[in-house]
Amino acid sequence: MTPAISAAELTRRYRGQLALDHVTFDLEPGSITGLLGRNGAGKTTLLRILAGHEFASAGTVTVLGGSPVENETILRQMVFVREDQTYPDLKVGQAVQVASWFYPNWSHDLAGALLEEFNLPVNRKVRKLSRGMRSALGIVIGLAARAEVTLFDEPYAGLDPVSRQLFYDRLLADYAEYPRTMLLSTHLIDEAAGLFERVVVIDRGRIVLNSAADDLRGAATSVSGPAIAVAEFTTGRPVWNRRRIASQESAVVAGTLNETDRARAAALHLRLEPLTLQEVVVQVAGAPAASQQERTSA
Amino acid sequence: MNRITKEGAGLLQEMAGLDEGAPLFVQIAERLADEIADGGLVEGAQVPSTNELAAYYRINPATAAKGISMLTDEGLLEKRRGIGMFVAAGARDRLLADRRKRFAERYVEPLVAEAARLGMDANDLVALIREASHGQGGTTL
Image (cartoon, rainbow over all chains, first blue to last red; front, side, top):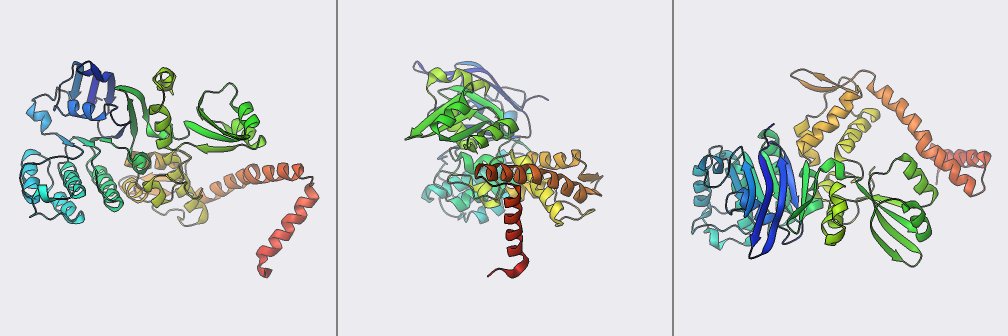
């Protein structure tokens, strides 16, 4: 299958600062991928380059088989919803209408239903909307466009949990009916974890993890109990992190545990807890640069 | 399986009540298997579609499809072309036989091991179990 999105050795420099450092990855068509990482890691830069809003200093990016830069055919099949998206001086209804002219797969029904569900006042000026409402408008456009490539960059600034849940639900329902390639950057990792088929973690401009979401569950386990027992159990295993209080220790062990490991942990009276996706990302993206190399293979 | 998700766990999973330990598709398969074993989904009954499961559990449809195919591979579900997925004949009996075996491994063996640590032998355990099951017979309080 030709990848929907392909980046090869993508590098972006700002005045000598490396925002993206030889980023290489492919995304299969018809999948939802989470783009995760800390602030300033390079997520927005990457999305902007994919969307053709910005140029790479080096490397190539291919979207739907071609370069997105000034390529109208491709741009019409791609929607990019940014954090704090700005709009011209329009009313909500007009902004939606303008968007509908641009995207060939636009669904008026979906747009209408979403406007209502998010309680967006169509006659209000976009600049008079609250931050959360402006985010909701971006979501309405991003979903109703039904674009083959859908990019969301932290689309829910200021949105309350109820609206975020609505976003997840509507995204999943529409995606199930009209599969497309979605790339969503977010800091609310555990909240959105169920959406993702793949997860790409970026840190300091480099991809530090690119994995099927299923493989990340149980990819690391927190082992806690008496420090002596933890030390015995973790000998010879890759340990990401250790914390200690009095005689108790908690260590994060990388790699999946088998039945024998579990039985041994039980015999040592250790508690085992699988790391959530968010915890895995914190371990991978929060690490000092020196120790990062081994993690990319995890 | 139904343990309370810990603080900070996902809104999506929390609302659907999924546990974050096993891969999501395994959890979906386990939920369906539970329903079959408990008789909620009888043999020959149609199981929810991939999209229905995805919407209900708030997960990626591909993940739901993987859960379904796991049960199909085990012969617990069967596909009827153009209609959907159905509970296969004999699915419940097979699940129950499997679970009885796992019951021994998961509960009885650790129970015996822990009892030994506390200085109790098999007779002490049997006595305790008898006592507990009398309570369950309805004569408590």
